[in-house]
Image (cartoon, rainbow, N blue to C red; front, side, top):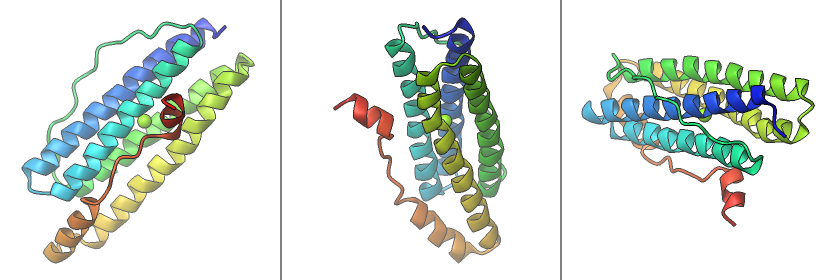
Length: 174
Ligand code: MG
């Protein structure tokens, strides 16, 4: 049995992942409205990834015979001053998500719930990648700041990002 404490915390995490999805969808739409199609694509892929994160946690609660409870999703901002600001907020946000995941791992460790620790290890690795990719985007956009041609080329590059189903979901659907 999963503890009540961890059950509630994972339900809250599902909400946090869906809020993240909503945040990145808002960034995607704002980028699209401002003509940055590649940036819009990058954040749309991010939106899809966050929905997958929520789904992985939902599948996990289901597999442990614990009910998923969907909570209200809070409002997100709708516009940003620049693409660089979007990526800076992305990094800030992902750092907060990392702290939430670490807290889940701390609860699972306290519970000696080894199955939950295993599932959370995937998220711990994923957060390292999320923070790294946000930092790389900040570096890239700082490098081309004020350079229209550089912005154009970078936006083109981000248009090539494609969504890949995360491994826990790919395995689950086999
Ligand atoms: Mg996430």
